[in-house]
Length: 496
Image (cartoon, rainbow, N blue to C red):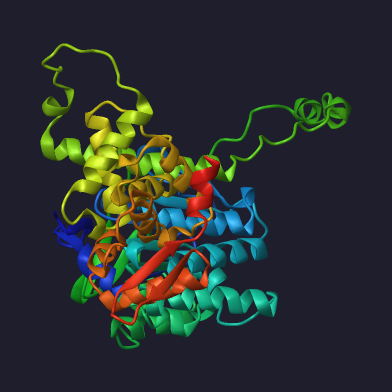
């Protein structure tokens, strides 16, 4: 896979490239006054890397929502969701590796800052198995990492500074590469700006910002005058992902556009003063009396979460097609059968085959879910109704061999499993299935396989945890043996 993208050309017309793998490790700071072309630069960077790495865009002005039309980005309206819903969506974004644009333009400034801080913190706090590489672009970063409190509430300032500092200082180990863009370096918190190793500096007029930009680029005061003379769309670049020496870059063209007003001069309407007076006041009273229609209802959070899951599954299918070729997927069945098998039975069969493969339980949930979605597509089995949480549960059932039990015993165990936390579900089911069969309890190696671990000590701690939760009872025997009782299993079987 290519790792370099062309960001623009230098003064000699030669291509200037950015190494994305290096950028993921070293982060980027973009600075320039209003009208210098920062948004154009960010758009170019996002468009060129859309097929290389996951992208998360914090968009306070709604300028980048058009990425959802040309690429696979999902637009999340920050005004439509509660705090818990926003945190849950951020977790799903990391889990499914879906590129998103968090549009905050419908919120007040302080609400924008709090929403972005919550979203960034949830991205940062994702579980280790979801630490995939992602570019996190924060436009107007001086809002979210202010150098001074200003009119912000102290609680809000601490929250947003913590989120931005985590992104820029500690995000690399979690796969998060921060790209921050600001109009004023002097207004951006120094501990956030200092963590970037790559810089793209645009036109700047204020001496304090110009001097800070020159210091970051390693230029003296006389050379700093170049920053004031830069044309729109021209930047000075420096950093391990761009160039070891300052290089002038003219940013290339983009495919999508923002919501900027028309620029340049336009002829005024040709009409007399009386005609213009009539245009302004015609039917004014009727317009004021007409009630304003309510805005369309926001998209419910579960719907958006489902869209994220479906997008991830669709992307997995496209990736598999790219590898295997469309001919293999679309080939007609040799037996001429045209009927689609029962959906639930087909889904269970595919998951059972996946769980039976050697080493399957040691793979990440995301990789397993992607494999599942691909197999369903190849078999023409609808799978959009299965989200990641449901897939994990079904995979745990299959790994434990629950489908091999008689229906009554299976239903009894499924009913008991409703109250079992997801993190211990697979080993709990393995114990329950063995008990239902009348077999001895699985040994630590078998439980480790089901759990996806190779550490016996971890399994022993897991059994202690399950016993404290009241799920099982462990009886150690003097001879070294061990008996494990699944609480409530006999009663559930008798009732069923």
